[in-house]
Image 1 (cartoon, rainbow, N blue to C red):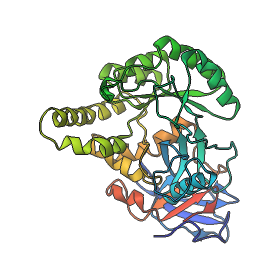
Image 2 (image 1 turned 90 degrees about the horizontal axis):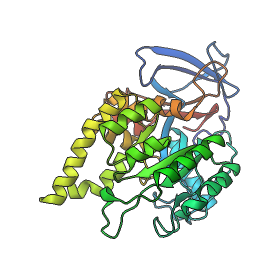
Image 3 (image 1 turned 120 degrees about the vertical axis):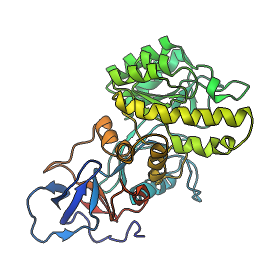
Length: 369
């Protein structure tokens, strides 16, 4: 498989792409790239890009943590070297748009978007009341300090504010997790964050999802106990759902194979998810793909999990492409727009594992693969 750096001399080159646009296209289109931008007219000297199907904008991963080490790199948590390695793994996989949903271990992401790198939207720290979150990962933020902390992060370049809206009690039951912030706390936070031009993402695995939606959050992360009523409200409000299913399978898949109540509970949850995901799409909820605790660069696994739990292959692919791009406000593909793409040798709608093997990756006209 090609790796990052196989085309170091290409730079922002001249390219010709003849491919079917994903996730909806049926017929091949011709596009050219020059000076890092798309052109709909032929460009002299353009070289052909491999791949007969392509995702304009590249793939998107809407729930990542680039300061955390899920790839087993021999690097320090939160370090600049780890962040660079994680971003390299993402772009090699054709993931060119990311939303980082919580910095940890003292790591920092700058506001600059270097050419050839994935486009990144980010939160600051994950906010939780003292003693009600993950050490080294969450910021200890009492409700009374939440708005001030959010404003400081936005002033430092964050476009998202992330809250740990619930967290298990002493019983360790994620599905009965008590709330961390009241609906009134969340509503006040949302108003302040929106006034500052940013958005709010809420982690929830317990029964608080409906109240969070009514309080005005912009995305529900995990949403283990979402129901049809909450999804209807999300569709009306344009609130996104990022199920992080592959991470859930990583943690719960073994339990699903057990006999007795634990296995029955987990199997029932997966069956319910298979019903809710297509319902969410039908209600207009932006269902988006996010890997969370999977290794960076494995968005294909999340797309496969979404497909296995009720979405069509095309809908699952949209969750990691057009639906995510639209929700995050990425510029649409058009002549003169910056050229980002991932192409594939075959049609991923017929064989989703092709998403793990891009034929070409181009970021701002720079060929990565």
